Amino acid sequence: MTARSPLPYLKRALLAVLFLGAMTGGAAAVDDQAILAKKPPRQLSAFGFFADAARQVPATGVLPFAPRTPLFTDFAEKRRFVYLPDGQSAAYDAREAFAFPVGSALIKTFAYAAADRPGGLRLVETRVLLRQEQGWEAWAYVWNEAQSEAELKIAGAKLPMEIPLPGGAVEAITYAVPNKAQCKGCHELSGEIAPIGPKARNLNHDFDYAEGPENQLARWSAEGILTGLPDMASVPAVPDWLDAAAPLDARARAWLDINCAHCHRAEGPASNSGLFLTWDEEDPVALGIGKRPVAAGRGAGHLKVDIEPGDPDASILVYRVESNEPGVMMPELGRTLTEPRAVALLRAWVASME
Image (cartoon, rainbow, N blue to C red; front, side, top):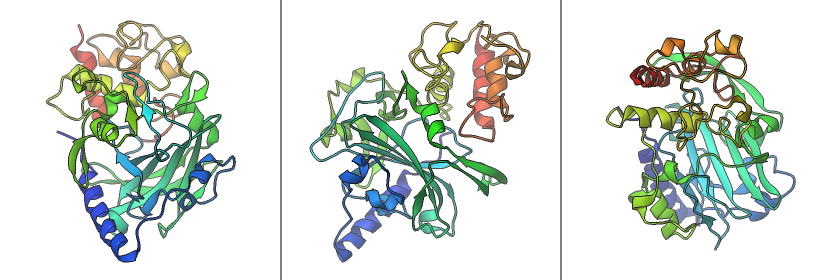
């Protein structure tokens, strides 16, 4: 089984907007000064990231992308885009997020399927990471009911709403838009804000661009927005976590890497836990196998080790991913629901260990 891809939708929408652009004079350009401004604009449209915001079609110079295995956020669909100033490029890194130049922007919209909305999506929020002289800045913008504009929410927001679930059910949740501090809570690396998704291993797969499928890294390199890309045979790649044909261990590690490792790593906010879940971690104890938690109690469910090989029910990692109780659940931000397919995957992974 593989995840339902948003890419054919993007292709159709982009072709439609290219046609409209030919009729109306073209798409608006990105405002580089808005990206660099010390005070963020109140409205998302001021950046000029979209040719058609309601349909999430990017403006000229803004490139869509997608990680192979995405972060889970209460079953939200994501639309991701990257922008670099004209003539600038990011530097390839085999392990970490690429080094982006000043003036770059990473844009991510959270949405849910809605047949009655433009493009078949109900847009909820768009988060932006802006690379300024002093480092990255993170801001969240919430979409209005008309889907015509998104407003800056520095203090975050709580949005009661009903969302569609895999399989066709609907559930009422309170969607949480992060405040400024919470953005840094997930994006902190060695004390600074840093991107999470645009890493070689996450982008090393085909994306269905308007012109057809193409490897994202090859496309970035061909467009000059990525330098230093080595021979593709040496570039790491994670699998789609829902691809049953991929190795179980790789699928579980890919899910943990994108959902947990931004905190659970030596340079992250959860470094004091000693539990490191990055894709390239090789130490079994650092991965939690047979490892006792730093702090026991409610969060550990009175279990003794992070991962008990062969016994998911005795493993704290499984217990916390399965929970949706505040103070127990992991990841602790970005969700109110449990992803049953992820729990099943991690249970199978732990059960397979000897």
